[in-house]
Image (tube, rainbow, N blue to C red; front, side, top):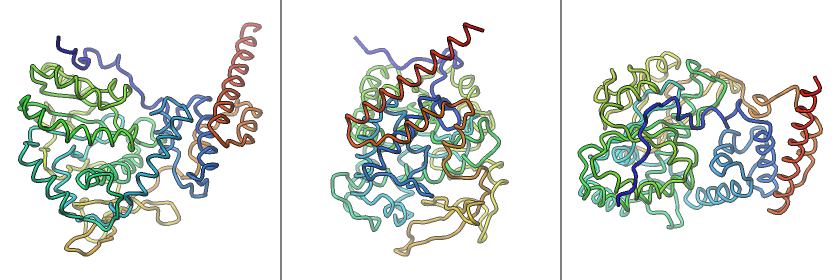
Length: 418
């Protein structure tokens, strides 16, 4: 008997998964405390420095906590593995020095940023599977494994073809998300963007093609879930063939249950109305009922609002090919976009544009989560605890939960007496 496919979206309003709950500015008191505990624990283990500037921003740490259902032990394990993996494969060097042509070749095999955002301000990506025929993938993998396209040294545990993929994830987290974060024409403008919305078009793909791509996509999905947790929000699957229930049986095993809950298969009649609930028509590609001129393989068709917000420099009027990221300039008042990578064996580091910083940086969690009614005893107790091992973490978590519960009981009793 075929497995049931992913849930079809009948009423999108009933599928409110995640954002902005659990993100900065929208944390519960217990979530705020767990973030503080997590930072204390990581600092004790030598994996985090409080700064300023901090070695890791709060929104990154929150991704690991959300992925592990706020368990400090589990989040620590995943964070530690990710940091060791990044260092072993020199992800920073890879992104800084990767050949631009190789980067663009890899980009053509994976989800493409459309240059647009959904209604919440989250970057919108498009992935059309039909372009990944066996010949294209085979040629790419052979070329990738035989050529080192950056100065990064690796431990050999991750294939070169996948390391190129993670240059694209670096682009998501270091370019697209920070850019979208600084845009104020969105709900919750003080909450950093750490997610992506994806349209995945599986039309014109045969069962044989899915089978041939299975190993390629499974390896990529497994590593991405492990090292870039909570970077995916809703995933809309379009054009599913009649046999997709079989394929769905494989795919859902590659993701954690939280990610699976965000994947929706749309029937033809559901595509346009569902996408329009999440994305303005001007930002939906025309082939899916919208107004946007964008086809797979195109360069991003950057939102005019984004173009108007940035100040172009050095003759640029658009973002160039290849990797780029944002760095603070003007005493932190602006972010500058730096185009990096290498062309013809020569590294580039070219300033493309800059954008005003919408909110002052620093300990965002302490600022956004500030609450005049917070119990001072809870805050001081958390800050004074020394976390040295997994057992200590459990005891700390118990103490925080008990204290918060006691506070809630006091509040309830006061309400009743009034």
